[in-house]
Length: 390
Image (cartoon, rainbow, N blue to C red; front, side, top):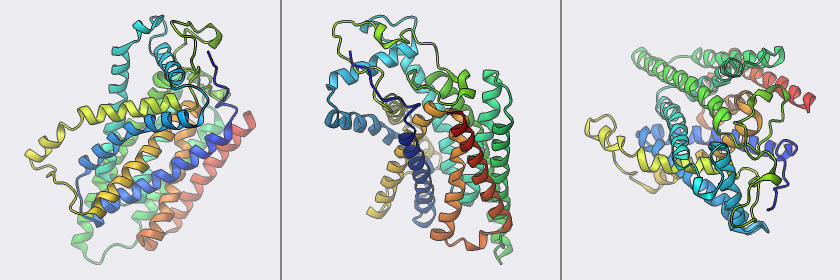
């Protein structure tokens, strides 16, 4: 048996690269999603959501192919290590042979994860056609606040002044960005302005609901689905330890018919396996609402009319795959508090990109600049807290 040498808690550089990729891909996905539904007129949020989340299925095969090409370990050893890691985490007291793999427990976990990911994502896809992009991004990322509250309550942690301050400042900054953009000059046409205001309010409400659900998802993922071999690098998050493993010592891992395995699995492979499983579950189950929505006229189904629209949707799918894959890895490494607060930086990036590419210079106000600055300061405080404790 071969034990993977990479320690994600010690290897901070790769985690930093993944974090930067998560921020950039979220901005790309947001901008392209708004573009395809507004500028290109392809207003089918559920269908776009279905395509994007079904595309998650490619993540694990791509990662596995990369390992087969670049690693000296055999494909069988890699798969076997992942197999054992999944089984020991889902059913640590039951798994003692290949025949006892918890199939139903695995399916139940994947279905629950798919639902908790799909509901807020779908609300986000709808909201992004109703409200301004900076507003949606800011409200979406208030899940940092909800994740922190839930974390402290569910795990019985003590309130840390520095972390609480970071979350409060970041959430206040998000509110300022929303307030600042809403304070921008209104359209000269009062009727159009009133209609746009109503749409924006609906979009903001949908995003807020999505944010609460997504905050719950992040905490539950870390609590029940995070890989057992991912060590939490922040001492304050010690209570985040996943379900106790029956094979904490790789040397004691039971060897069944063949001893060769890569255990723990290579960095990110466990999280990417869950990401791909969510994609397969989405593809198999969540096509059902499409004909129902079409029948009742809630979303008339039709395929993209031109190659440009197809290309943009493909780019949305690829950026969505990259974002969710990096997010799930970082949730296992850093926990929901650090990941969600760090994700608040997307508000600043979307705000800047909306000015550059969306021509929304008029949305720049003192309040929105102050809010963006507050978010950066909050993440800086949290980053300092991480470095201080390492």
